Amino acid sequence: MNDIVLTIISTVITAVVLPLIALGGKKLIDYITTKTKNEQLKAALEQANDAVQKAVAQTAQTYVDTLKAQGVFDADAQKAALEQALSAAQSSISADAKT
Image (tube, rainbow, N blue to C red; front, side, top):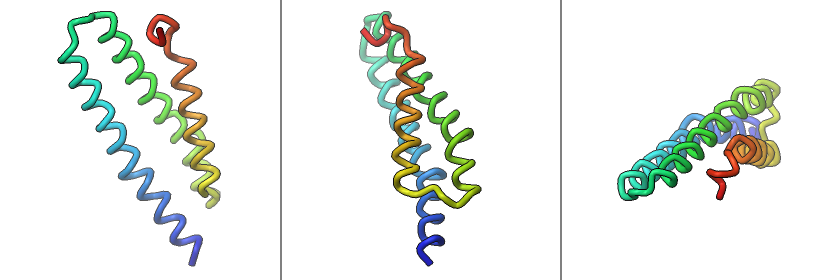
């Protein structure tokens, strides 16, 4: 019973919550970008947004999908997936964009 509930929750998180978070982040960056006149800031925000989207997609494809197939995508695995995506995003953003 717990395995079924955990599977349903992880499926909902992956299928609904993560895309909503990504969409919300994209909308926020679009809003900020339209409100700023600083081209350097715009470029940094766009680079950060792109890095996050790619990192989340890569983590989902290489880590999350494997764990789901094995039936072990629990809370600890979700936290590890978040940390892995965050690390990948941070490493792909240039030093100028971070500054």
